[in-house]
Image 1 (spheres, rainbow, N blue to C red):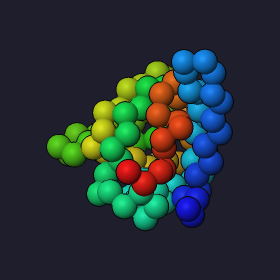
Image 2 (cartoon, rainbow, N blue to C red):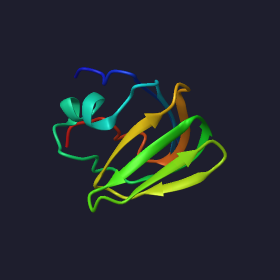
Image 3 (cartoon, rainbow, N blue to C red):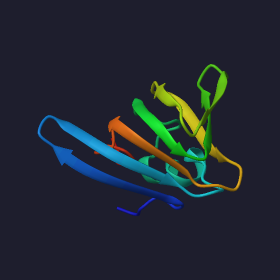
Image 4 (cartoon, rainbow, N blue to C red):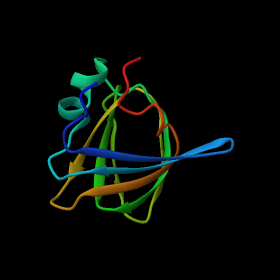
Length: 105
């Protein structure tokens, strides 16, 4: 399987939990970097995490958008696109979904 461009996900498996650190470079966009790998129109993974650095913009299927910035916790339901805002990489720590992120269904 080809790794998504501008994307690095580091995963730690603990008993009963998976924790991941998501690293997205400036210019990363789910629909351009991950969609070609998973082959779905939108991200179909639920995310629960904490933004450590940078900003990410999320657009839901219904068109609503929000920005998640460093220092904020977040939940993102399935059915979204997202992209890094600005010139700083986005780093998020996620407490679910890291082991299935960017994997074809």
